Image 1 (cartoon, rainbow, N blue to C red):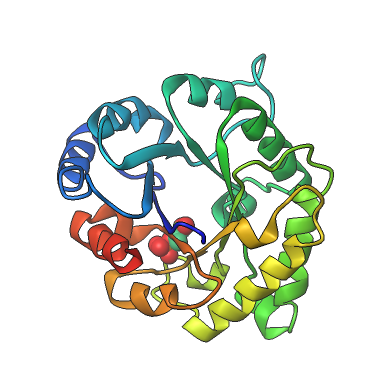
Image 2: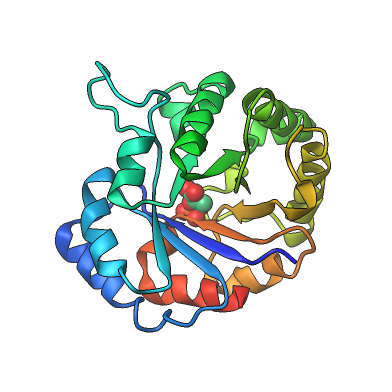
Length: 247
Ligand code: PEP
């Protein structure tokens, strides 16, 4: 039985006051949650978020990490640093990193190695663009993203995969529950070919305009084990509604 997981990706949003208000609106309510819950603020808001979430059911992650642990990499933040702060999770290979920072599967794989070695739980994002879906390439794209970053990993302990069709991120368009389930089943099947991974036990999240109103139907699908939430994670009541739908 896979335990549900709901992760909020705050992207490049927030301020000290915003974080205080957002987390303050969730911690008390979520103290006895039956699902795993995490939020991923910007790097600069991680310490404040960790303090605000201390003792609650909410764990904290980062939105990215470096592929190396230290050194002359100006502007980078490493996995050991995040773990040292108290982060548990790291999102890797988000489509915005792939699009705006030209992150390729090999680099995502190197970041994943660094994350696992540091004890962070990686959330690997995969997903096709609209053009790729319309061209009938969706499964091939996702398969190559999985293969390109998971093959040759020594350990994949705690890996979570998030299927995020690029055309559904921040657009208000959501994959239908059936479309999402079809891809999740394909992902689970593909993971069976990755050495060292228990595909049946691996949690698969759906991401792309998830809200309180559509979460329940998505979570009722056999291979959808939770959500990676962007926009709706910036609103405490929406995020709580998604968490409740996963309970
Ligand atoms: C995301 O960026 O991970 C995401 C799913 O965003 P949104 O929920 O806003 O589509």
